[in-house]
Length: 324
Ligand code: DAH
Image 1: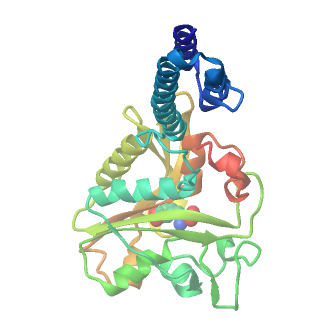
Image 2: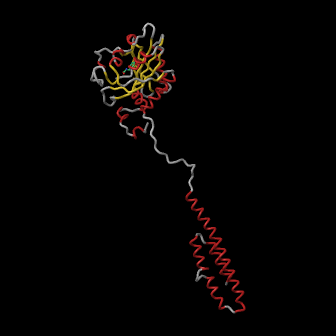
Image 3: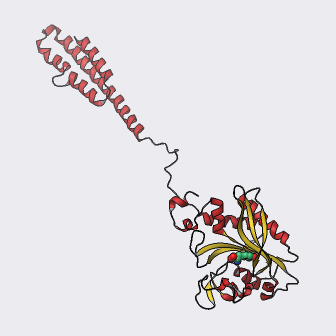
């Protein structure tokens, strides 16, 4: 009887999978009405000569079962702890949940890339004011009073002589007035015109370039812009110069760049600095020569990223911007 109960208890303690189950086993054997407690109660019914032996055996049984339960309790508690630790476990080496970050606006990125290309060729980045006077914006650049570019329909005037600059070319004038050649500068920045449609914004960006030294030729100009095109649009890009007119250059050119899949695209204006401009800043046109160019930053960004409506650039639609 006692042996059987011991076996049964051993078996059930072994099988108990958690604290709850173990507690049931404990009650079944050691509880008030438990199997072992019942054996204890029967001690009175045992004939006195066997009582000692019986009592000893039941007591042993009780102690053994208690020991087993205590042991199992330890094991289960440890298991439970392990299980809890397991559920709390985090792999700190896993990559975190990424927060969406913004990035450079496509126009700013092209602006920066343009600067990097010209700076690597030895050009210095300079800035000029966005509020200009008509002398720097037009007169000094050999643009006469009657020229259509001066028309108030095209420009934002504050007064007869003060306006938002219509191009970055007046920075040429400011730099030449304040320095002696040789000069190699680029000047990126905002410019303003009274235009608004799919290809024009009232505020857009240009990058002006000016190189002044002795014996500068169209060859230098073409090489410089060709190098720029190759670095900006990739190996195999070429430039071609088409005769054109600007008041501040002579000869003047429209410059096209050859883009695979697109053909020739006009990206900038350029030319050899007009002797009249040199005279306006006090340079001797017999001594100094130079080339200048001006390109649209937004326009290059549109070409490079295949954007067809320039207004997309200023809508601040994160879905549009994040696709570049
Ligand atoms: N200023 C011209 C414009 O806004 C662009 C330009 C053309 C700049 C020829 C130059 C140049 O320096 O040589 O359309």
